[in-house]
Length: 168
Image (cartoon, rainbow, N blue to C red):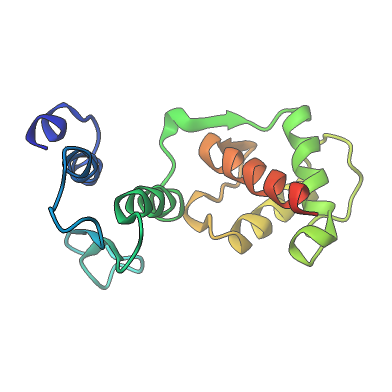
């Protein structure tokens, strides 16, 4: 666990999750896995700045709690951490067309976020629709007012839409 912690790049939370998973793979608790938790405090770091709860994830009575901790931590980072500048990509015509298609599909989320043409033009109507859609999907802290999108958000949008299409 200590070696994994020391070798893992990233934040304290990244290191802690990696160390917990390594401990589990090395044998973990002799009683087996039942729960896992990650709590990181930072002054004023809560969602609205009124608490110190930077990360607070707990898994109880789960068949694979460490795997679930990794999954929930990834979602936590996606929904609560701001975009890294190096993660921004331009919304080109192809990405724009793809987003317009997703946001126009009323059956996908039960509402049509975009009602304009699917033409790959990232105009004000498309930007507003994307901002509304991202708020709906809880990407609030990654909503932008320019022609860029966070690569991780775009990957998550694509993944979620693909899973939905496959289930239909």
